[in-house]
Every structure is written in C-alpha cells, then in structure tokens.
Image 1 (spheres, one colour):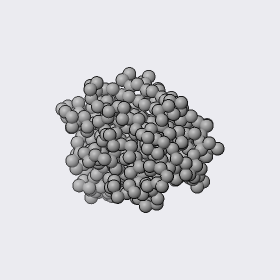
Image 2 (cartoon, one colour; image 1 turned 180 degrees about the horizontal axis):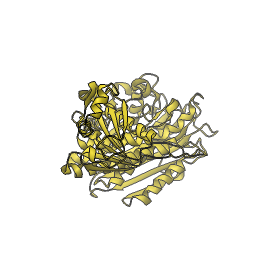
Image 3 (spheres, one colour; image 1 turned 90 degrees about the vertical axis):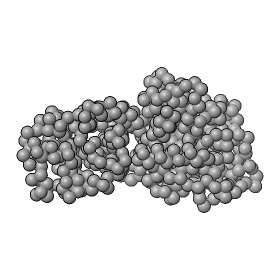
Length: 499
C-alpha cells in the first residue's frame, strides 16, 4: 500500500474515489460541502432525503458526481463531531477501507484528516489512519493451498492536508505510520504462524534476517549450551521438555550516541505452550501458538525503530522455547537455580513464561539499561481482570509507568496500571526454595509481576501483561500486533522528552 499527502480541493482530485465525512444530524464536513457546491447541491439533496444520517459507520457511495474529476465520492458517517475519539476515528477509517475494497477502488484521496478529534494533531490522524487501513486490509493466507488476491486491490491512499505548509508534517507522519504499521504486520505474521513452523529456531532466523535488512542492527543467538553456561537454570527447566532447542535472541539497534543507555525490550517467546506436565485443557489449546506474541511484538517494535532510523539505542531480548510434556520435562515440586542465584520451586509447569523471563531479565543487566520493558502473554488472570481492551501494566519506576500509560493513550494501544505492592510478595513464599513460581488463585497477574520484580532490582523496569490483547478468538481468530504501536510511541515520546 502506497501512502502520500497532498493539498488541494476535493472536486479537483483526478482519482478513483474521494472520501469525505458527514456528521450526525446530516451535517456536511468542509470537504463534503465543497463537493456539494461543485455538484449543484446533489449531496445535500441526497442527505435531506435520508440517504445518509451521519451515524458512525454509515456510508453512501456516489458515482459520476457533477463537476468533479473523481470517478466516485464516498461519504462516511462519523457521528457527533464532539464525540469522535481514537476508537471512533479508527472505525471510520476501517469502514472507509472495507467499503472501498468491496467496490474495487484502487486509489483514494481521503479528506477524513479534517475530522476534528479532540487534542489530536494532523500527524496523529495520519498515523491512526494508516494503522486502521492496514489492519482492515491485513490477511494471513500464506499457508492456504489456494491464495486468491483481490481482483482490484486498494493500492494507493492520498491524505489531504489543508495547505503546502502542512506537507512536511504530513510526509513525516506517513513515514512513521508506515513503519509502525509494518512492524505490526510483522508481529501478526509471526504470531499467526503455527507452532510447527514458528519454532525458536525460526524466530532466531527472522531476527537474523533483520540484521541483513537494517545495517544498524546486530543480532546474536545463544543456543542451549550457551544458555546453560550462563547459569540460566530457570530457562533450561522449560526448554528441556521439548525437542525444539531453546534460543536466547538479542537484537541490538544502535542509532544513538555510544554513551546513551539503551531501552531494552524483553519479549516472551513460548512458540507453543502445552502447559508441560501441568497440561492445559484441550479446548482452544491451538491458541497457545500465540504465547510468543511478546516476542513478536518486540521484533515488530525494533523493526519499526530501525526502519525509522531513530537516534536512540534499543535492544530487543527474546527468550524463546517450547513448553512440552516430554519425559525430561520439569515436574511440579522441582527446584531450579536461576541466573541470579535465586532458587525457584516450580509448583506449576504452566507458569513457565516467568521462568524464561526471569533469566532474561537478569541477563539484560549487562547492557546497563535506561529502562527495561518486558512484554508477555503471561497470565489468564489478566484476561479475567481487564478483558481484551487494555494490557496490564506494573513496574518499579513511577515515571516509566507514567510514560507508558501516556504512550498507550496517545497510540490507542492502551494499558492499565495494577498495584505492585509488597503485600502480594508473601504469596510467593516457598518452604523449600527462595521463591515459588506461582502465588495461588488470588491476584494472579500481580503475583506473576511480583515474581519478575525479584529479578529487576538493578534498573527501572515495567511489565506489560498482554494476555488479553495479543490475539482475538472466535471467527476473527488471529494476532492483533499489540503492543507494537504502544512501544514505538513510547520510544518516540522518550526522544521528544530528551530534546
């Protein structure tokens, strides 16, 4: 998909389709008014007859509108002007895209950028439009025997800006939006692959390919021998139950000054989670291929940062394994020693994500990080607590938490802070080791973060539990690409703050 920006009047656009907004109570947007005037009142007459009310999601596709150079005009209902928020704006763009896709339109000039969204800039609207359009067009059919591409795919979108003075801002917004959207699609593609294709070795290969694509990246992959030599007993306790060899992948993007401390992103990469000896129920177990969405999100975010060539140092660390019930798999009651030296009693082998993450969180101390953010589909309890809308957020540094909450709000990829109080730590007490890997039924998301917090005392750290937001079930089953947008917006806002 090609995206560009252009200034100009809607009736003068020589293109397949011009898109304009109509608000609730049949109020025309400025672009719609201009088209209406050019056509001698054609649009307002249709609106008066009740062809389009202006409610969110309503559409009216017009052909051969008088005194316009475009083939079609698409009017999109946007609801009340004062009520348009991030969700509504994205929905409007999604409706536009699906309508155009069904109509066979290949090129479009969108004047939806003139829609007022409270406290949001032109740049933000272009970002969000690109993400919404690409999300609507996204398909995953690589593994189908018959792939039927659209007969006439939508291939070009021009965003309207009010004048030449906004062209530079618009072009930069397009560049950023396309990079973030590409990172989201990479994340989706990896997560949607089945576990027999997307193994730890496959993830390592994809990371190595990034090194070829982006000169400022360097990738290292540690195998199980290296991991064992580092003393990562918690990590090894998970991977030893699978015939697929576990990997520890590090992607270093060095776009900033050599003295600049890096932002480290750690992504849980369990490419399939059977639960191990604590076997999961069979229903929907296929969705456990999505247990590597944290890893996919980190790969997508680092890819976007590298594509944008941002002046920042970012390191992605991905511990990746399969969790399988082999004869050599860990058993409930086993005790292992983590890289930090702390001993862990494994009371449940299905709480394996924290076991690979804790060793990865100890490993990243070597980078002397400015901040560490781990991303993991860690607990079903997070789905119970927050549903499928925000990711759960906890951490040990209030400014970092604040910045992530802000980035989530600005990106539309929201998160919600849960308490990480010392009161919860005692739930992890063990009679036989320094710490147990589960804390009982109560506050499972928080006790999982409490477990990780034991390994993050030497730096500023935040934990994103994305179990509720990383994929969708049912008819729309598939990865969402979250939290790529949140992570990249956090890094962009971090750079703005440093100026």
